[in-house]
Structure formats: C-alpha cells, structure tokens
Length: 135
Image (cartoon, rainbow, N blue to C red):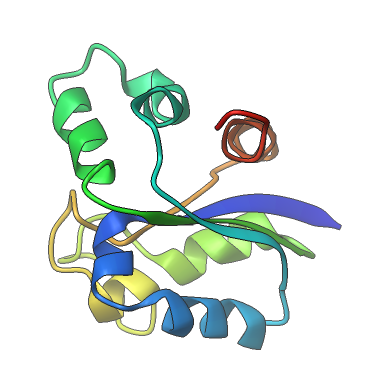
C-alpha cells in the first residue's frame, strides 16, 4: 500500500474543515494512519518547503503556515498520492473543479487549505519531516 502526507493548512484548521476533509478521505476508502494537530516550528515549515527557498513568495508562504496549528496526516491506500491530488484540486481556486476540496472551499491561491505530496519521494521526505522526533 502506498502512503502520502497530507496537511490541512492553518486556514483550513481555522475554518473548521478538519472533519469535512478527513471524512472525504475516509469515504474514498483511504486509511488515516497518523494524524496530529501541530503548531509547527519555522524549521519544520522551511524543511517542508525547501524547494521553494529563494523564491519571492517563500517568506510569505512560511509565515502563512505559521499563523496557527495545522493537521498533519499520513494517509494510506492504493494509488493514494495520485487520487489525493485529484481530490485536493488545483491550487488556483478559479481552476479548481467543484467537488474537489479546493473547488468547494478555497478562495485564494496562497490560502488554499490543504497540501498533498506529489510523488512517492516527496511523501517519504514530508512524512519524515513531520513525524520525526523534534518536529
């Protein structure tokens, strides 16, 4: 079985969407392996978004995620990475299809509620960042 990392970002937590999002994941037949509501440290966010370091939006992205707690999760299932990315929807709410998480709830490209790993390698790296000792 494949595993992926999913994070309900601080805006999704603040808007009370944790239950709705987890419900959609479970209704799809995926298994929630780990879940933890965390107030992330800056070093965790910077490690998570390391590929964006040096880009003009990096600091605002890190600051946004640090605004409040996030729900960090490990989800398991067949083709979970690809299917979760489809369920999440496009990062641009103008392009996100209704029925997707972002299509139904997001209204801003930066504050877009949720993150999902985009590959097996990213999932492994992100799970290790969020669920290792000291994160």
